[in-house]
Amino acid sequence: MDISVVIPLYNEAESLPELTAWIQRVMRDNGFSYEIIFVNDGSTDSSWETITRLQASDPAIHGICFARNYGKSPALNTGFRRVQGDVVITMDADLQDSPDEIPELYRMITEDGYDLVSGWKKKRYDPLSKTIPTKLFNATARRVSGIKNLHDFNCGLKAYRNKVVKHIEVYGDMHRYIPYLAKNAGFTRIGEKVVQHRARKYGKTKFGLDRFVNGYLDLGTLWFQSRFGIKPMHIFGLLGSLMFFLGFLATIVILILKVIAMCSDSYDFYVTNSVYFYLGLTAIVTGTQFFMAGFIGELITRNSAERNSYQIAEEF
Ligand code: UDP
Ligand code: MG
Image 1 (cartoon, rainbow, N blue to C red):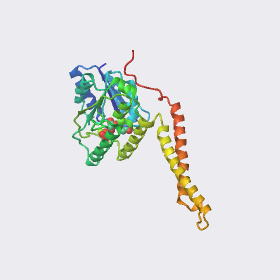
Image 2 (image 1 turned 45 degrees about the vertical axis):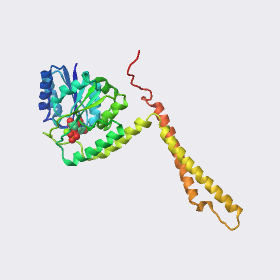
Image 3 (image 1 turned 120 degrees about the vertical axis):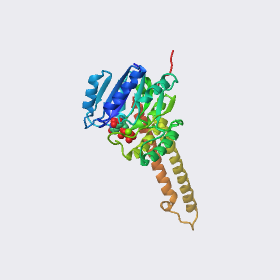
Image 4 (image 1 turned 45 degrees about the horizontal axis):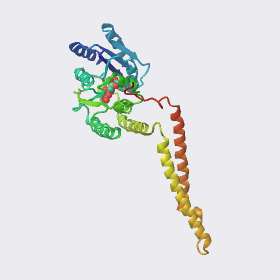
């Protein structure tokens, strides 16, 4: 099979027939063998009935129906477990992404050798309240992830080599960072294609402004995981040692002052009146806490199923 299209959707019933017909037309015109996997993320409208009806007329259509709304990432991840095509395309269900981009995306994966091609909505039809934070967000994501050539991390329209989606796990709200997840899994040929973006025709956006707060928090988590995920002691041990060293210095200062005070008659010195006493105390306590965090982190990673999973590129 050439192409699997994965479409996560939440209350998008009006868009589905039009979207399906459009994808089918593109696939037939280009002679692709394909499947379309709709993942219904707990819609409360008639989305699932619509999918069932569409399926009756085309056996290439498959549906997965969540019992409740879990989110876009769980929907994508579940779809990814089922795909069979050599190239996997994800797109939003709201008709903001154009199926006409599919042939070129397919070509970039199969001929240009990309592992992942992300769409870039260069000209967007979104309100300013969304486009400006999006620019900032993408600039941060580029820096933190080190994927310098991507302008639009969170574009719903993306193409993947099959083994990429089988090797990554998209959870929480991590769909915003799939290129970063792919890079961490060892898929470094990541490209970009300018795609046309269309205004939402039916319904309204499913994400509010909290997407930006959560987006940044998730980016921090991913960065931490990729740097120290399987060696937490390397960061906590370093911080702990620094704190301990500071505490040690403060204690030495205290000792010296006390000895001087004991040797002279005119100079009164109480340890608990000195700023160094409190500095030393705090530094040693926090240092111990950093070490404890490190040890607990190490115990947790030791039990993690991921601790020895490597992606092997070639082997004889
Ligand atoms: N979506 C989903 N589960 C959710 C929220 C959204 O499956 O909890 C789907 C939604 O139906 C759409 C895609 O994710 O197909 C992108 O959502 P939306 O168009 O609302 O996002 P935006 O275009 O505003 O970034
Ligand atoms: Mg949309």
